Length: 190
View 1 (cartoon, rainbow, N blue to C red):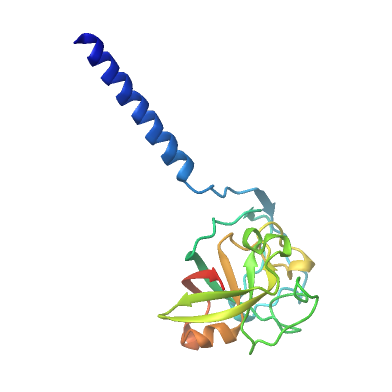
View 2: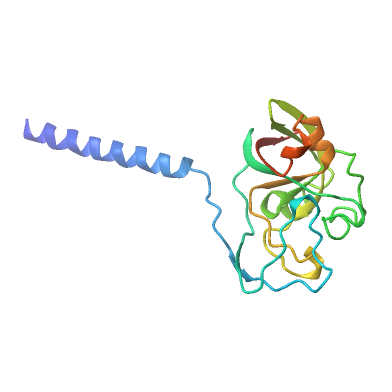
């Protein structure tokens, strides 16, 4: 009888180990900060503040990321607004094609990890928010690893969970213009 009891206990321990190992493996990879960046004061007349853009603050520490949260069929993100036109708050031309894009076209920039080194250039994504959906094309990176320099219009690095969208995306989602800026959304590859 004691032998059977020891065998049963051993089987329970093995079962617990097997279950805990499976649950550990099933968790998505965590995206941790890759570093810090010290802000500098933008030169006079630099840092376009259209669309409520932030400018770097001298001496402020900004967290940087080279990754984004794992993708799913309904990835949570924050929608922000960006101008992809020349002279807009997006800085230089888009990374994917070195061109500017009309703000009346549904285009987006994805945080560094989701942008995936340009692998998602010209891919359509579906953004869900405010009870509606819109298809938009990826044309740029919202850089989560760098910022506070001329290339990035003296703006801080993007958080790692951003879908930075043209006004056409915001309009298609039916968000009133006075509420444009930040919106919790989900997105997926189309």
